[in-house]
Image (cartoon, one colour):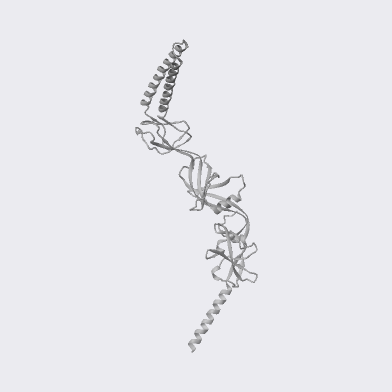
Amino acid sequence: MFLSLTVAFLHIGCQSNKEEKNEKVTLSVTSPVVKDTVILEDYVAQIRSINHIELRAQEKGYLQKIFVDEGQFVKKGQLLFKIMPNLYEADVNRAKAEVNYAEIEYKNAKQLFDNNVVASTELAMAKAKYDKAKAELAAMNTHLQFTEIRAPFDGIIDRFHVRLGSLIDEGDLLTELSDNSKMWVYFNVPEAEYLDQMSNKSKDSLLQVDLKMANGKMFENKGVVETIEADFDNETGNIAYRATFPNPKGLLRFGETGNVVITTPLKNAVLIPQKATYEVLDKKYVFVVTKDNTVKAREVKIAAEIPHIYVIASGLKKEDKILLDGLRLVKENDKISYKFITPEKAMSSLELYAE
């Protein structure tokens, strides 16, 4: 009996000490911050040249000369490759001879016709033969010109797919040419975010975006969304955007990747630290402290997420007091002792990216 009483007193004593310890815990409480801020949304992007084409041979023959090097910047009209032209030059010379012969026949027929020696049909036939010979000469000249491959626009030469002396067939790929003066950046946007972006921008304005490169740094020039596809992808619920970025220094190249960053301004946004929330069945809650120091759970709707911060769509007002830490130490209707931390001080301890 003495042992039982001793254990009972010890248990009562431990409970008393525990209750006193809980009563002495002082928790931190703060309020939401209401201020103008911005939301940064990242989208995985693919970077493409505004003009990227394949250069292919239009005639068959041996590659006689390469005038440029891989990675070289070339100007429009600059000679890049030359296919051995001997055969085509011979065709041109033969066609020229045919033109000269047909021209002589035509002039003779014209003179005879003027003297009423031949009928008009013979003159017409001579004229047709002459025109046919000139057309064939033009075709031969075209084939000869095709032995010289020139740059159709300013750009950068890609890797060569042939080497000097290679036997090239018509249509063989020689290299690629990229115009990187401007870059097209493609990315996909979910339907809900598309609707928000379109409702926030003015009617005739273009959506301005930034580009975060693969090294984590921001590209120095801003881009604009010039094109949005007509249809949503039914499988993903996304729609494709195309932003155009000026690239005067040539830093961006065809095939790079990055992230397009869209900045959305928010007026009078209600902000709270993320650590002041907890989740139950995919819903977000905070503990609101009432006037009599009682904690009440309240669901909040999240409008957007900033690093370490939530933008609240509904559920809180500026004057509400919320539990900042110790959320696991309390439960609904508990009375607490707390110290109030100003919203500015509470936010300053976070990595706040809002402006």
